[in-house]
Amino acid sequence: MSYWRGIIHKYREFLPIGDNTPVITLCEGNTPLIHAENLAKSIGFKGEIFLKYEGLNPTGSFKDRGMTVAISKAVESGKRAVICASTGNTSASAAAYAAKAGLKAYVLLPKGAVALGKLSQAVIYGAKVIAIQGNFDDALFIVRKIGELLPVEIVNSVNPYRIEGQKTGAFEICDALGRAPDYHFIPVGNAGNITSYWKGYKEYHKAGKVNNLPKMMGWQAEGSAPIVKGYPIKNPQTVATAIKIGNPYSWQPALQAVQESGGLIDAISDEEILQAYKLIASTEGIFCEPASAASVAGLIKLTREGYFKGGELVVCILTGNGLKDPDTAIKVCEQPLTLPPDVEEVIKYIET
Ligand code: AN7
Image (cartoon, rainbow, N blue to C red; front, side, top):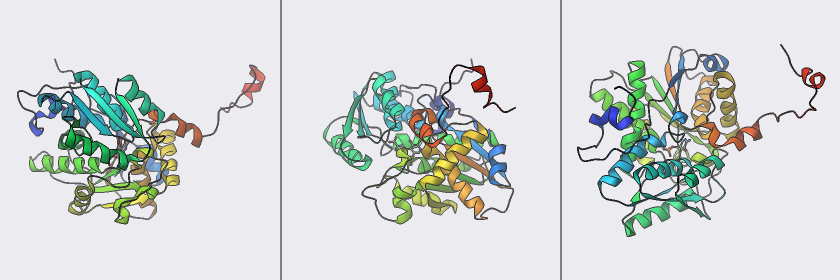
C-alpha cells in the first residue's frame, strides 16, 4: 500500500523518531506546490512563482508538520497534557493532535485577537481554551513559566520538535522541483517557520538531495516588525493577526537564516498584505489567510523595485487557509448584492 501516511512516515530518516516513538499523525504534509503563472503575469514577475499551499494541511496550516512530531515525542516521554500560547493556528493544531493522542490540551489565546475559525477549531477538538487579557507575547511568557512548574509539554516552537517537523516543507519543495528554489518567501511571526525551512534546505543539501540553497526572504507586518526594527514591539498591531507577535522566540535563528543564505527580512504594510491576499485569490483561485499573503506581498514589493533580473525560481509559502478568517475576506471585498427574486432584476448584473 502506498497511501500518504504523513511527514514522519515519509521523512523518518531526517527526524528524531525512534523505534519506540508512537507516531501520532493526521496525515499532514504532501501539500500542493502550485505553479502561479497568472500571478506572475499580473505582477510583472519575469521568472517562475510556485505557491506552497500549506492551508491544505489537516487543520488548515503549516503547524501540523511540527505538531505531529511534538505530540508524538510528548506521548513517548509519558506526558499527559500539552500547553501552548497562540495567535490561533498553533492552538488549532495542538488541540487536534492532542485529541488524536488522547492528551489534554490547554491553549492560551490573546483575548479578541484570534480569527473565529481558529477559535472554533480549538473548541471543537476539545482543548481547554483560556483567553488572556493581553497579547501573544504575554501568553507565551505564562506558558513558559507553567512549563517550568508542571509536567506539561509546551508545543509552541520553543519546542525543538516543532522545528524538526516543519523543516519537511523544505524537503517537499525540493522533491517536487528537483532542486531548491532561488528565493524562498515566507511570513514571519514567532520566526519558527523560517528557521525550520532553512534547517530543512541545509539538511537536504548536505544529504546530497539538492545542489543549491535558496535565499531566505522573511516578511513581517509593519506594525509588528521587531526583527526588522531591531527591538521588541510592546503593542504590536496588524490585520494579519497570525503574525501579531512583538518579541519572537526564534529571533536569532531567523536572522542567522537570512544572513547565511544571503536573503533579507523586511516589513510590509497591512494594505500591501490585503492587496496580495485578494490578488492570490482572484488570479490563482487560492484562498489563504492574511498573514500568509505577506510572503507574496513581499515578492510584489521587490518586483516593483526592480530587485530581480529575470528567470528566477521563487517559492512563496502560503502558511494558512483563508477559511479560518472569513471576516477579513468579507470586510475587504465588495459586499454581495441583495435583490428581489426576479429574473429581470438579476439579469441586469450579468455580463457575458
Ligand atoms: C498563518 O499560531 O504563531 O514565524 O501561535 O499562523 O513560525 O511564527 C502562528 C504563526 C505565519 C508565522 N502564518 O509563523 C500561532 C502562530 C500563519 C501563522 C505564521 C503563523 P512563525
